[in-house]
Length: 115
Length: 110
Image 1 (cartoon, one colour):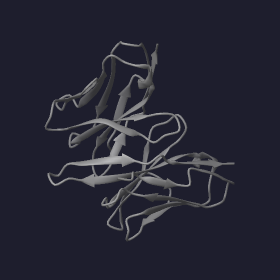
Image 2 (spheres, each protein chain N blue to C red; image 1 turned 45 degrees about the vertical axis):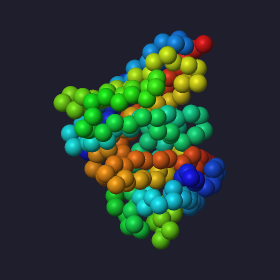
Image 3 (cartoon, helix red, strand yellow; image 1 turned 120 degrees about the horizontal axis):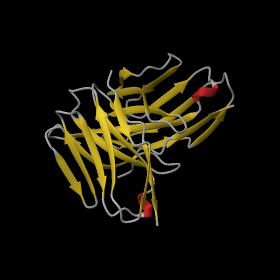
């Protein structure tokens, strides 16, 4: 079973530019979560998509947005990049078991550097 | 909102010693508590998890305990090995999302 795949792995952008990050969840998983991990810090919740809809978002400005496609893959868009947006962006795929159990599997992330 | 505190921020042990990392959470409705290991340049990898109807879970050298009354849970690693060196994150599933602790950098010296 393929894991959660994210692309690109690394990206360098200039302040003010826009960026799109991509995530493909594990086959059969319908939920995708996005997290931001700034250098040396913990994971901050960004967005949650399920069945093509945005279900929840964290305390981030509107220039952070995204969407989920019919095949459950997802994009994270960041407009008007700022230096402090430099971080590792992680995507997690959520599975739900028959007994109501669930779990989260993370991809390897996209390292975004804003200069 | 939900908050998860994690201690210590760094932990240095000798190979073969035990390591304990502790977390507390604020949302009493939290019902799922995973632990992740993150190595340099990689995404977090799930190493063990526990649900709110269980007090303790063990998987070889790793164990997790949960005290719902006190709202805290702990990770125990026995017989540590150099390859256990990494950053460990606890998390609690509150309303619709995982909330993470700030991480513990574990260094196991040979």
